[in-house]
Image 1 (cartoon, rainbow, N blue to C red):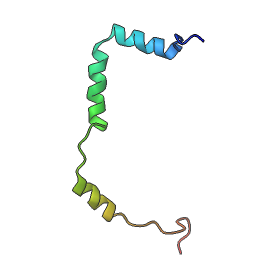
Image 2: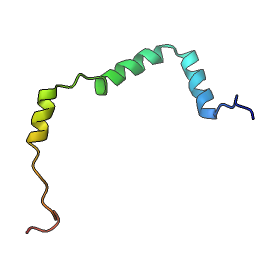
Image 3: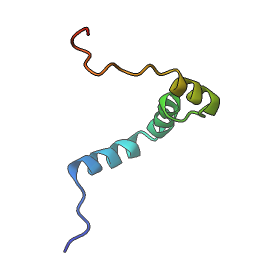
Image 4: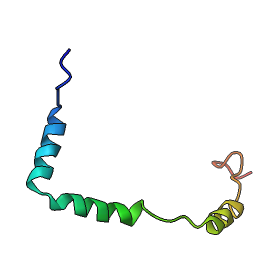
Length: 62
């Protein structure tokens, strides 16, 4: 079995990153905006405690 297969997408990404090495820095900067965050446990607990339970059937007032 030939394990050296690379998909077209993998080849494209490898080529793109090779030609534009600054993309990795931009990717990490963009990731830090949305994902790499420290979670505040107290704030998370307040959000969880203040959640209002949904009524059983929301489409009709009852």
